[in-house]
Image (cartoon, rainbow, N blue to C red; front, side, top):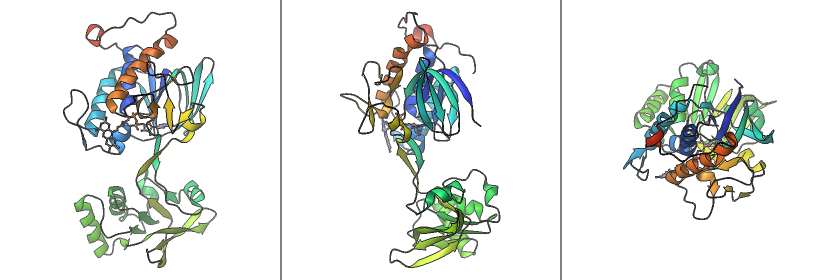
Length: 341
Ligand SMILES: Cc1cc2nc3c(=O)[nH]c(=O)nc-3n(C[C@H](O)[C@H](O)[C@H](O)COP(=O)(O)OP(=O)(O)OC[C@H]3O[C@@H](n4cnc5c(N)ncnc54)[C@H](O)[C@@H]3O)c2cc1C
């Protein structure tokens, strides 16, 4: 549901660096709201390598992406930052000395400063290169995720992909869909071995159709209403499968999207900042983490953490004009108590 929110600082991106920015803002008594296109926090750590160990986070000899994100969430928890997930920030407009942000779900966020921690851009699905795709997406014929399993009851569903999502949803939907067809370009699946075995057994029992080795070739239908999916082998052999829905699971990609339109003077998809403050060419908008660049920049999580601290300190005078900011260690001041939003 669309929300209208006011906060001192809007943080665009809930990757590791955006999450640490919540903590740094909170330590300086600045409230924040975090917005991300993904349904879960953690950015690349959660979406691309949740179970891989990271070895260069200070004081963590080894920590998985998932565990690092959980620790950052716990560290920021005392500040009760509002999380707006599953929505993209589409517009950033300077207004009344602050900024108004609007999201793809129609939320409005009013803030006095912005921290852009958007990594390499918003995560979105890898789309198959098919004609007329947007109109089939708009009708819900082509989808990249399942939000309500019941929507597929009694429907003909074509599932494309060879990873965990494709195989897990094929196994889940076979009991309620009229028919499930799994399209994959080769015989091997990149999923948990037990799931691959279950898929094979379900196909042998006739509960699922496997279209292997096939790739998506085209969409059939009228006025955006899907009726079939055309498949092709590498040799060009064609077949069409009846379909009310195509679920395409080809992983995630990142694209800068609307950020490129915000007048931030991008240089090869990165935002140039003043290193000491991480401020961009728009006063009050600071960029940190992978999206920020300056001489000597290292795209490492640890450097993003330091940038979060510098940006928060640089923003403080905007939020508390005229109030002197005395530098204090956390050991001295502890963690300030914030009331829930
Ligand atoms: C396989 C792999 C291994 C890695 N290993 C290491 C390592 O060992 N050590 C290390 O330091 N680094 C490592 N990295 C790099 C590290 O993950 C990145 O430096 C880090 O994730 C950057 O954090 P971030 O918060 O700046 O951006 P991200 O993690 O990219 O998060 C940015 C978030 O912003 C969101 N976003 C972007 N635009 C919008 C918008 N308009 N609206 C809403 N949300 C938006 C995105 O959806 C995303 O969730 C690795 C990366 C990969 C891919």
